[in-house]
Every structure is written in C-alpha cells, then in structure tokens.
Amino acid sequence: MHPEGLTAKPTLTVPAGDGLLAGRIPAGLHPVVADGYQHLDVLTAAPVQNNGRPEIVSSHLAQFAGQPK
Image (tube, rainbow, N blue to C red; front, side, top):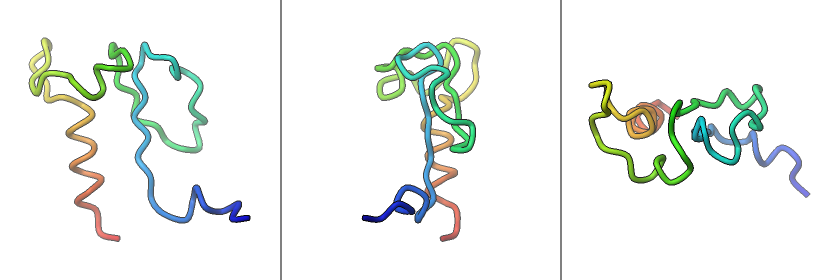
C-alpha cells in the first residue's frame, strides 16, 4: 500500500466547471476550474475562447509542465 502515492508527485487537476465533477474536487488539490466547460470541452476547446482569452486547460498544462521538478 502506498497511501502517499497521490501526493508523491506534483499534480494538476482541471475539472470542467459545468462537468460531472463540478464542485466535487477537494480544495486541497487546488483545482483549476475551467468555468463554463463541459467534460468534453476540456479536451477539445478552441485555442482562443469566445471571450478572447487563451484556452485555460492548455495554458495551465503548459505552465505545469514547465515547472522545475
């Protein structure tokens, strides 16, 4: 058993704001909520959103990947 397994490495949790897990991700995981997204939008959203801002999931994933280990 490895009870510390989920916290052994850095994680990025990006739930869809209107998806099945909306409001169900523990705050301690520091989720980046993609407001207005449905569950499939997280994978298939346009690079530039209707509000003119960059797509939140890809932006946060790139920041996460670029962090020093």
